[in-house]
Length: 566
DNA sequence: TTTAGGG
DNA sequence: CCCTAAA
Image (cartoon, rainbow, N blue to C red):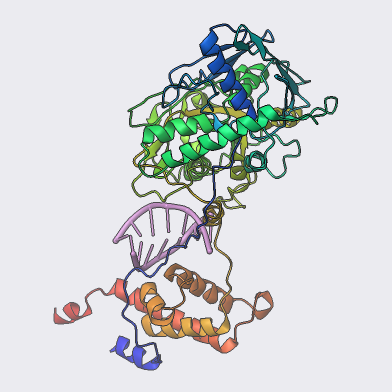
């Protein structure tokens, strides 16, 4: 009948392989590249460890070194009195009473930048925070005292924006260390504030002295790294992973930032706690919004268990889903795999990702902000994400939101806080929302180390696909297929005419048809891009009209035969 | 997963 | 192209 006639009318040649598996949409592939994490060294860690060991032997010290039980918050404390208290995470293996210093679990990643030298047992470090010209000076003076070495630490940090005293960290200017710096630095971070306090060589105290101590330390470090590497193998338990990454995190920096936060605004402060064994990995509440703005932006700070705090600025009109994705993107790059972000507002889980933040109650002018919790939830379906992604890269590589939707998207690490505050203080147009913290992860499975390229790949996957305008021949094939199959069978169209075009999904074809119809309806002057032959557009119009009528009739007369029979 | 539509 | 509600 009609349909038959239609087929006749639009009968065209089609590929014979019209039968194809339903799932033609190919996932974007990922390239892989190995990246070594074992090229990190840090002399200061060694120093600290040396001190620790020596102190443990002597029991005499001016620098208190405690060993809490894998405390996250308790890693290092800074007093306001120019004294430094260091706390080290617990080692997996008990420290051996060795005469040689052990490398402490911070390993190289703790302070990846800066230079120090060991000169006759004296270490001098000047660190620049890169934060409003803050500078930190740390003078460690090991001395022999009855067979015990005492490290006398004095640290101070001064700056216009903060007078907080913090210990500076980091030495070891090895290549690997510098690479780490880059890894954690934003490219546009002129001040090289890379998630750590980055000590640097003081101009007034040039280091041209032999580095016997350094060399020794590095050697030990290297061996330790080797050991550590073996432990990073598959057999490594999650706990090990957890601890390892806890160590890897620039603890000093984090503390530093907390301190800064406190000094800048107590509203930023967040408390975290560990919920080992709990399913919802962690949540953390913060007090209410700090700033209220007029441009309907909500700025969130998310404090992760392992990474410096993140800032998320996102329009209220953005969806919860995009917020979640942003958070997930940022966090997942630092985590292993298999997690997704959950969001709770005032204790209620927000499941509808399509809601806007404003609808959800996440807005600058309500009180829900004090009960905004993010959580990490194991997700079996979640794609494998990076186990460790430099935060700075997260900042740049988070274009998962439509540009049109996201006028401003920030995910900032805390080192930017000061600058940020300064910027916003001027126009006072932003809301700062303390966000929840991700304190602990529940690893569904051992983490996988992701490569640099995977990082880039993730970046790419977060982006919109490359634009690939349809060629005339593609349009021709599409028109042909639609003429034959109709406008409601895009999967068939795909398999009929675009079976081998992996980059053309049936959604793409449907969209293209949509635009073709539109193009055909508008005047040629209004058309853009490669001109489609008018002949093809006419066919588009024809087929569109025809199949539209078909659909209409199908809806109007679902059962014409039965009607006739009646 | 596919379809249908809005963004 | 993306995102999603529905089917």
